[in-house]
Amino acid sequence: MNKLPKKPRNENMYKAILTLKDVDECMKFFDDLCTVSELMAMEQRYQVARCLNDGMIYNDILAETGASSATISRVNRSLQYGSGGYSIVFDRMKEQEA
Image (cartoon, rainbow, N blue to C red):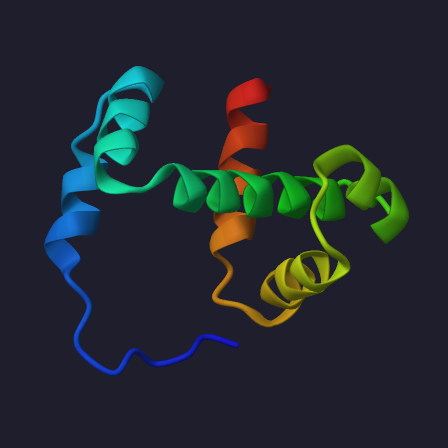
């Protein structure tokens, strides 16, 4: 599922994200970087991914998140066949909770 971009990715942006120290700084950065619609879409996809990871079914995810079945399906494909980014985050968050 990992599509190759047509032009090289800007690693500097990802390095900049890694310099952020807490949630508040991260939210401020993304508020400046993204439109409200972009943020809402990313937050919704993340919420869908968490629900899928927790074993919820599509209808319950739709009711909880308001995401379309197409979005849920797309996120599910990323979880199953993507680069593993969601798994990295979920595993690390689980470690922090322990």
